Image: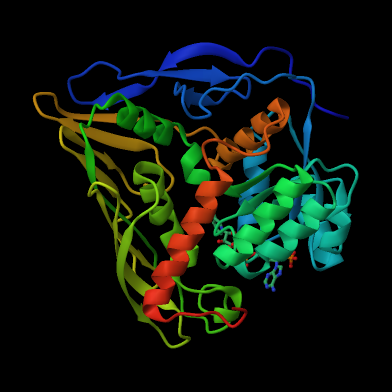
Amino acid sequence: MRKRHPTGALQNLAAFRTIRGGGKAQGLLQLDAYGLFRAIEPRFSGPVRLQSMNRVIRWGILGTGQIARQFAAGLKVLPDAELTAVGSRTTERAIEFGNRFNVPRRHGNYEGAANDPAVDVVYVATPHSCHKENTLLALAAGKAVLCEKPFAINAAEAGEVIRFARQRKLFLMEAMWTRFFPLMAKVRELLRSGALGEARLLMADFGFRAEFQEEGRLFDPAYGGGALLDVGVYPVSLASMIFGPPTRITSLAHLGRTGVDEESAMILAHPNGPLAVLTSAIRTDTPQEAILLGTAGRVRIHRPWWRPITLTLSREGCGDETLEFPLIGNGYHYEAAEVMACLHRGNLESETMSLDETLAIMKTLDAIRAQWGLKYPME
Ligand SMILES: NC(=O)c1ccc[n+]([C@@H]2O[C@H](COP(=O)([O-])OP(=O)(O)OC[C@H]3O[C@@H](n4cnc5c(N)ncnc54)[C@H](OP(=O)(O)O)[C@@H]3O)[C@@H](O)[C@H]2O)c1
C-alpha cells in the first residue's frame, strides 16, 4: 500500500536554537511537509512548495553496502518516500537487504532494479568506479538518478553522464548530502546577507583513519581509491559552494603503497583573491572542522563539519554565538527530500547542487590529481 501525506508543503515556522552566546536566535527555519527544518533561503532551492503532496516517490537502490544501508534507514523519515526495490550483484544480498529494510522487490542484478516499473528514482550506492556505468544504466531505463559522491572518476565521465541525462530530460543529482543540512543553508544565508563581510579564507579538512587494505575500495586504484575522491571531495565541494570554481590550484600529496593519495594538502585560489586551504586523509584522523573567515566575522562548523549540526559565529562586538541545528533522522533524508521536491516540481536538477557545479568540482579534482601524477587504470 502506498503512503499518503495529507497536506500542504510548508507549515510551521520555527526559530533554530541558539545554545551559547548572548544573542537571540539568528534566523528562521521552516518545517516542511516532511517534518524537516529548512532554513529560509530564497535564492537557492531553500524551502520548496511541492506541487502535489499526493504522489509517493518510489526509490530503488543499486548496491547493498554501507552507504546503501544508511540511505535506506534515512528514507524512513520521509513520509512520501517508499523504498520499493533493491538491486545487488547477488540474489542473496538483495534478499538480505530487502528483509532488513522491508523492501518488497529484490533483484539479483542492477538491470532488474533499474528497469523495475515500480521505481521512480534510482540511488546509485556502488563504488566510485561503477558510478558512471550504473547511472547510465538507470538513466537509459528512464529513471531519475541520485548518484553518490564522487559523482564519477573524472570530469570526462561526469560530462558524459550529465550530457545523457540532459538529452533524455531526466533528473540527475550528485549525492553531496552535506549541502542539504539546514546548517549549510544558514551558512549560505550568512554569505548572502554579508554578515561575515567579504568571505576571504576557508580552512576545511576531512581525514579519517582506515585500516590499510590493499584491495579495499579506499586503497585500490581500480576502484578510484585514495583520500581525495572519497573524502577530499567534501572540502573541495564546500569551497565551491562558497567561492565558486578556483582559478589556481596548488597541491601536494603523499601517495602510499598502492599508489593512491593517503594524505593531501590543497590550496585553491578564486577570482578576487579568496583562498581555500584544504586537507584530506585516509590513514589519519583530522579535526574535521571547517572555518570560514570573512572581513567582518568568521564561522566555525564544528566536528564533523561534513555532518553539520553546530556552528559558532564570531563577529566583532557580538562575541561568540553557538547555534545548533538538531538532526532529525540520520541526515541522509535531506538530500532525498531535495530530490523528491525537484521531482514534484518537475525540475531536472537541483539549484543547491547543480550539474554544472558537479562537473566543475570534478574538473578541480582532476586538476589536483594531475599535480600528483595520479592516474587510475581506467583513465
Ligand atoms: N555520502 C556519504 O556519506 C558516503 C559515505 C560512504 C560512502 N559513500 C560513497 O558511496 C559509495 C559506496 O561506498 P560504500 O562505503 O557503501 O561501499 P561498500 O560498503 O563497499 O558498498 C558498495 C556496494 O556496491 C556494490 N558493488 C558493485 N560493484 C562492486 C564492486 N566491483 N566491488 C565492490 N562492491 C561493488 C556492492 O553491493 P552488491 O554486492 O550488493 O551489488 C557493495 O556492497 C562510494 O562511492 C562512496 O564514496 C558516501
